[in-house]
Amino acid sequence: MDHAAVLALFDRDMREDAQPDGPDTRVERVGGVVRQVSSARGWNGVVWSDLDETNAQAAISEQIAFFSGLGRDFEWKLYGHDRPVDLGERLRAAGFTAEPEETLMIAEAAGLDLDAEPPEGVRLLPVTDAAGVHLVADVHEKAFGTDGSRLREQLLARLAGEPDTIVAVVALAGDEPVSAARMELLPGTRFAGLWGGGTVEGWRGRGVYRALVAHRARAAVERGYRYLQVDASSQSRPILERLGFAPLTTTTPYTYVPRAA
Image (tube, rainbow, N blue to C red; front, side, top):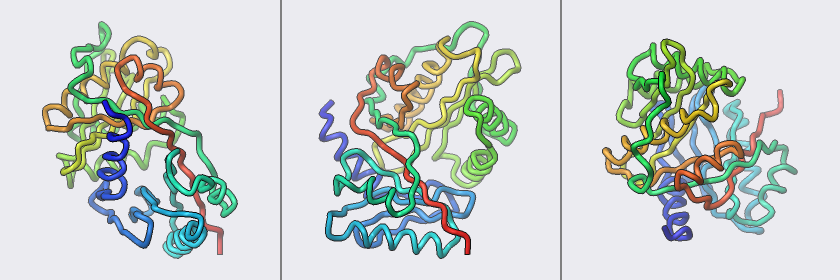
């Protein structure tokens, strides 16, 4: 895989030509910035920018004013190769908070081990209804220790309005949900995004995560997607590298919370 060429393709498909990630969202191109605007429960933020030292500060101020006017928290999704080189410093100086850095990892879906099965006693359940969505959100809360209500609402909306753009799956040990993950599919792109992948403590390191990756990779190949993309944490990066994913750059979410009036 030509890393530079694939990264350029990712930038074009998934960032510069970004599509809304839900039925209640829109993508806007304003100057050198591409942003997604959603409801307060959806994802609001900047997905791509083409800036330099002469216009970066003005663009940052414009986005703060725009989202603050809507009363929305928002995220500026900064990649390691974005310009100017001090864009992260400029965002922090403007009041953004940097979340933990992750690694953008990409693999050719057909080149992965698609035969990986879950460990004995674990079965994979495709999520097609509200009951399955609640299982995904419950696993998310247990695995990551965060509130799953926003994820629950987003998955329900996607299944109801755009079911062809989402693949979600839960791993069950008996009747107990022990891991869950989803894949987001944007028509017209060559990339399928892997998200979630949370496994509850006690089931980690037993091959469940690997099986969830293989399940989604098979679904991506069946639907004609060439590449799989993951924003990998430091915990999942070694697993993904062993599966055949390549690290292409870093990605850091910078979040901004409007000041109270």
